[in-house]
Image (cartoon, rainbow, N blue to C red; front, side, top):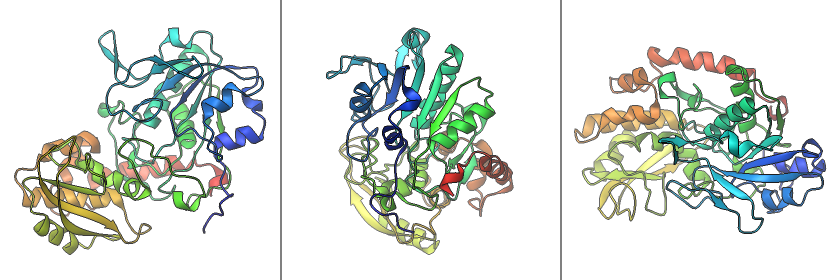
Length: 387
């Protein structure tokens, strides 16, 4: 189905419609970035600082910063318009360790934390990990926690890929879930609280009008790049597969105008690679050879051979499976490829080892059981209103 332009309300829109009743009388810390916007384009910081009965006391910034412009570690700062402190939740060294959660001093005097950030449906896209760490911090300090839910832009269907192993728990794998989890931030929050046994007063303000089968361009909502290199729904559709290669010696298009829509390296023959990948008949995509020179990130200012990925049927495409077939193909064709680094974002050692064997991209026994268990667990937390 196609949503009409007025069909989908995000959690923030529902909160506005309901006159901020859940937050009235509370002193809050707001975890957000540039994607925290209502349908009319207003930013959540402006909305909540003007809301009757709501006291915004602090802002907390995830990876890429409060404005979503940075691709490096971020420091604490002050919001120029409101004068509120902005505390970094990404890679600010504190007593020798990276800080990914608020500390007790930053939470002093607050009654609640409110999370409103647009996710894209990938385990290693760090915003929902930030949410999880903040939930743990709120539970430790006895604070309420609110999630203003938003649609999963690549639909809430077809979870895919190996479930991360506990040894990889961190900023790109907060909880054991597959690469493509097919859940919203609100649904993940409910799962986190249950599975981690958090003593946490959690409220999800659910989106309205969104169904699990909807892609972002069917919601009537404006696309806002959720991070500097996530520039389109097309890129988000491919991200859970293409990004698996990023820890290795492959450019995934950072430093070009189409990140995550192309990949390559100086040692790759794009014509041969495109032919091999098209011969694999991966449903929903085609590949064509390109040459490109990134101006940043991996292989900056070096000409790369590679392929551009065209999505021909997004509903048939299984992007994680596609990424694993690409990994198998690189393993077979290019001894230069750093195959041992695949595990860094796959985050499951048996899976990484198995896909480099013949037919290994077909949900081998080593990890299909984990996915089966996740599907059953996931059903408990799927919001009925999104069915």
